Image (cartoon, rainbow over the protein chains, first blue to last red):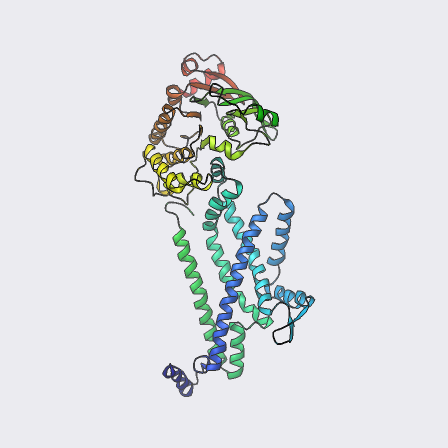
Length: 248
Length: 256
């Protein structure tokens, strides 16, 4: 491993291309933490935004008009405002109203961490789009198919679980992938509230080493690979779910 | 309502299995059923024919409560269907339905389509259901297509899977809602043969159909409906050879 690190050290000495994130243990450590942080942030946001999308689409399809209205207000609110403003609103606005608690070492700290606020705000942001995506999928399931299920004794809920959702999911998978890709990229906004994710640690690293161009390229590549893996996973899932002889 | 349910629980086989009495049904302002009555005995094959928009499909959809009615009564094995106390699952176990557009579940194979409801709704043992499903698929002559998805089957094959699917629930009555209307003439036959075999097995069948030849051959009783009323009814021979009402005569002259 040392040979490998030294290779990059001599690369710097000979050409001036300075990749401290490889040969310098400290920078390497914080960079890897940043990557983990971004992945963890992305996964948490994806998970919660999917839950919000499912619950929202379910509430929107309910027969009570007030739940529909609440979901509608939520969607409008989060779709028509910038995600950065939402994050500031949660972190500085709502966060300031919450009590300060005593941390591990007796130091006062906010009740909800910056990381959690990032998850909350981004999940709500992407969730608003997911509601619409799931709704479009659910509406694409023919009424006659649901009726056939009912005629076989399925209750509304059973038909929803066994027939509507599996079919709707296939319909909305492509747009869902799009939204997930956007969400992963939007996690960089957490930079603004000092969550030590990839962009934030990279900024620290290039400030310390003045290797801005190198870090910019590294950042682009890492995001390209991360999102690439997501897209690859989603499209192979889509292929796997594809039904022979069926339009969706 | 409660009273009716309690009173009629002791249904016996010499009483009508489906008793429809003075049923009225509106879609908004439009009255689609204007006082329909009919009694259907166990094991009978009933064909309901008539021009489009005469309320035939609506009528049979009311029998398994896919549509509700505005007044009148429909009793299945003595149980009032249009009651607040209706046990929908109980009703749908008794009354199967096959649709014009097959409406199979496209994400499941033929075999899974047949197995799904007994396993998921009736919570029966998948092994037992599987045996039954395989037998039913054989009965509708689709051996070897168990693992095909609906999208890989022809219309006639899909419709036969749909018939097997409703048989898997072991119903006492099956409703057929223009089940051959979406098929080409070649495949109509294979579906009709399947239905005929069912009828011969003693299944109570209620069909909405435009297949006059089939009605003539298989039906025990034919109802001709037009504009929400029963214009004429009788055995096939009475109906086809001695129609009395001018509307029936006109309809038959157009069709035959």
